[in-house]
Image (cartoon, rainbow, N blue to C red):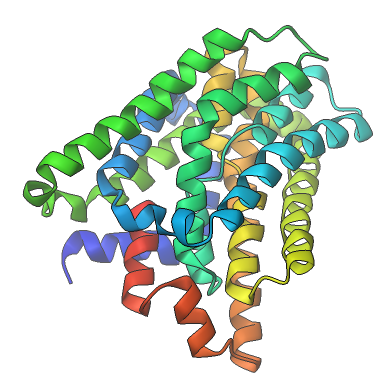
Length: 336
């Protein structure tokens, strides 16, 4: 196993610990990380570009194999999560800027680490990857539209500037990566080994910059933000789980859908907030990156413990999650 493969394995294995340490470091020593806040859009664009470079036809296999499942994720993701954020913000009587930040999180697509969490939870990795890809590609249209609908109660939000920002930060880098991979993928196989690690580093820099620029506000009102983000996050897991139970989906698919709906792209929420509003609006996005990863890791650990006591049948897991454990590992590690 090469150096970058081992490095990416460490990122996956200790994801929650690394995210927590970076978040705490930026909170306690913001002067060392505040510079990153000026480049969050570049870092996030790099994440999306590497995502495009690693995309393959099988990433969209579930769209064609099980289109209703992928559609369900998109509908609940963009239907329930923004509404839940709005309700939580009002129930907790959050300050206007914090409330708007939580709505930013609710209107974002699936989180970039949801595929890894799904793999760790013995979930349907192929479905997770497909759902993340679809929600990310829909985000230039859905995110500003939903922000205008729910965030308009707090402040006027212009659709087109937000749309253009997401196209520039998300859509164009992904499309560019896909095009390069399609025409020159054979020549990039060596470089693709370090792309997941590069993507992970970029995500950590987005987190560090967002936390550092808001360090004092986080210290003053952090518990309120933590409570709001956790309630919103857990409500997403519950919504995904209940919908899957109603539809009688198998265990791996239920886990994948619950994770996909519960985990939001906090990095995108923070980046858009910093670009279009002020740093306080980015607080919820920064907290989301840390807390969603921690909750996701805890959920994955609980799933692993449950499977050790009553394992999911091999035929069900491998048929739904991937053709082999090796393929599942590759799928997850490519997309972190």
